[in-house]
Image 1 (cartoon, rainbow, N blue to C red):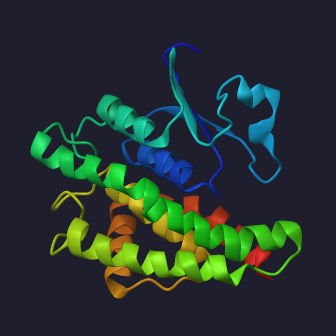
Image 2 (cartoon, rainbow, N blue to C red):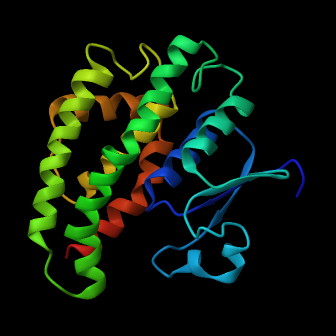
Length: 221
């Protein structure tokens, strides 16, 4: 389908939520194809023909296939955001956005996923008790992450790159929401940051996050 933006997503996935919210925020015409992670649809041949790495999300814009979420966020914002807000062309501002996107992989992402996976997901799927040694390890690291994020990436600013929201803030907020769904209590600084992102995005923010909240609730019963 030449010229059409397609997202392959499951909203239990943090970067999937970020991509969906970005497209809504900038009103980028797009189609979303739902790939159910819990049912293993990302492992099936049809999806592997799209993404041989079997990861979610993926994006396709005409003949351009993008298999990494941060690359997709950058591409979509650069192509479809006429406001130059979400991924600014100004290099001094853009470098702060890129800095967080590069940092988060082994920090916000790794330990948010680790906490949720070991406390909520694996026990529900395997019908076992959580490995509290791993849970506590990721919990400790999440506390470090929130301190690093608050002091370095935010400081006294409302958003990562300054006064305006960007794709970095959107992804960060979506990543923070994952351990929150599992019961992790972030600091007031982080919660206020999430509220600012929610206010900028509007009602779609909670609509998109409804699935992970409900999934976590059901798994923790």
